[in-house]
Image 1 (cartoon, rainbow, N blue to C red):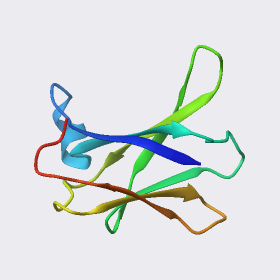
Image 2: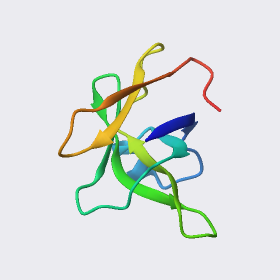
Image 3: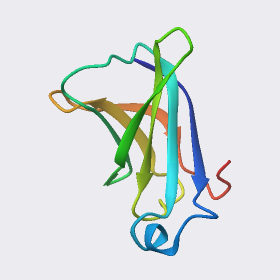
Image 4: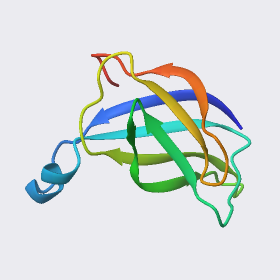
Length: 100
């Protein structure tokens, strides 16, 4: 699995009950993601993304994953990805004060 891009988006224009539970969306894009029975896992710093959804291209390839974070990460928190049955791999991508 190769991560080419990571984006963070503040949740806006969503119902208040969602903002009580999640604060931010993380989108991880790249190549080599597999649709498997064991799920993809994304962590930003010490927090694990929730409600993960795979991103599928028009050619039915898995192009990445997006999930929701329960709190805004600390600047410098690194993004790690992997599968539930394996250790996570640091991507070299970090959260900054200026999410996309």
